[in-house]
Amino acid sequence: MFFLRNSFKYLVYLSCLLLFITNHSLSQPIKDLPFKNIVVHEAPKEIIGEEFIDFLGKKLKFNKFDHQINLINFWSTWCVPCKEEMPSIDKLVDVMGKDKIKIFAINLEKINKKKTDKFFNELKIKNFSTYYDPEYVLANRIGLRGLPTTLIVDRNGKEIARVIGSINFADEKFISWLKNL
Image 1: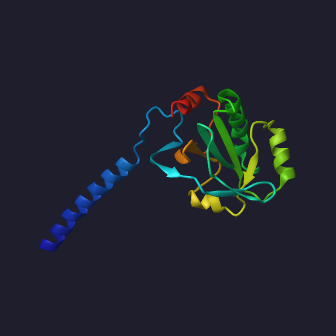
Image 2 (image 1 turned 180 degrees about the vertical axis):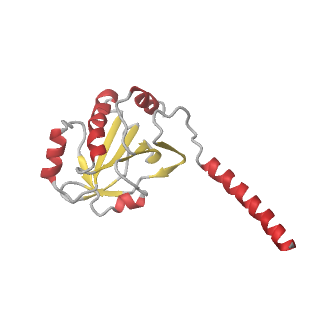
Image 3 (image 1 turned 135 degrees about the horizontal axis):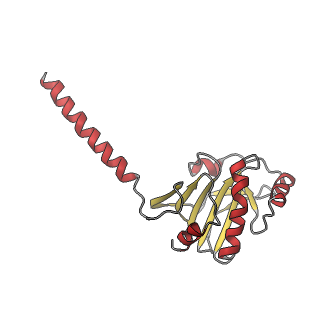
């Protein structure tokens, strides 16, 4: 009987501790997020050194980020939400300026320049190029869970936030929030 009472007491303490840790880890350090599907990291995550490839299959690495804000957008041509948000990413570059923001659009499909060019032309995308991760190497390393997903990376190569799912990147609230990071 004594053993059961102590076990129950420890179980209650453990449950309270887990509840506290869960609530604390889910807290957002930046208030007034423009969309509910933006996750801001308490401790930024390193992106420098991660690899992806270009149209020719040449491996590239995130070595240096020259822009104040960098978006790494994971997408595919078959992804309807990706297709819906892509024009707003293009417009975001128009609004913020190419000197302030850089877009790395990473397609998770096999390299197919014709298919990608058709996709970009239909959507009138003009402000960024596409890269690839057909073997999901980068996607797995960063813990990608679905498409579209966009990493928000600072000048120091640290992922400071992540957009899970699609949003309107040209939304005034989002742009204002992004400028204040």
